[in-house]
Length: 211
Ligand code: GRF
View 1 (cartoon, rainbow, N blue to C red):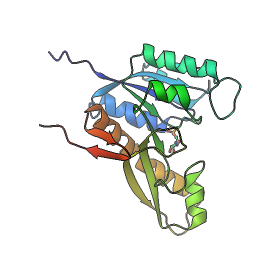
View 2: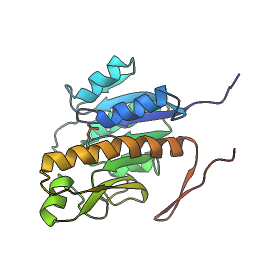
View 3: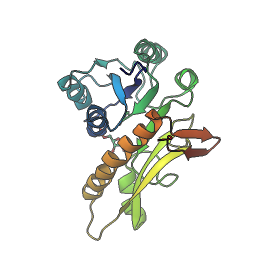
């Protein structure tokens, strides 16, 4: 019998939860050696909470408080307490639409990752697929990165490119990027759960675990 403690993931999201589904399914299929300990949303009716409950996972709404783009102090404390009580090893931001800073990142230093729908450092911020289309790039993509005090600035873990095609609309490009996200994010989370990713300054080094 394997008595090793399973790697525990906390997921934060505000939207429909398609990246969460890709990660949860990869855990269920054993492609990621981890379990989802808790899913938290700042939006009571977010699809991500429904998708988690359908899978029998712990899913909680926590009110974000009085601000629009960040958590207020009470909400930040409630998020931290819930994640600590769930004993998470890694926090995955899967479409979480609030900026996390200060105390949260101090408590979970180097343990918070995010997926962003562009090849960072190009097109940080909102609607990156639209920014890419407006700029006229021929390739864009998605990036999994550690979260630091900046916006979309932390060390890059993995990236996948996506072509911009003639006739693309913001919507068609966004759909193509999301399909890439559903491949890249579970792959990166799996590598982290297996302890294959190390951070040294801005560099992340992937070292496959010994067979
Ligand atoms: C993703 O496209 C991700 O890049 C961005 O938020 C979106 C979340 O979508 N950070 P979903 O809720 O996972 O479907």
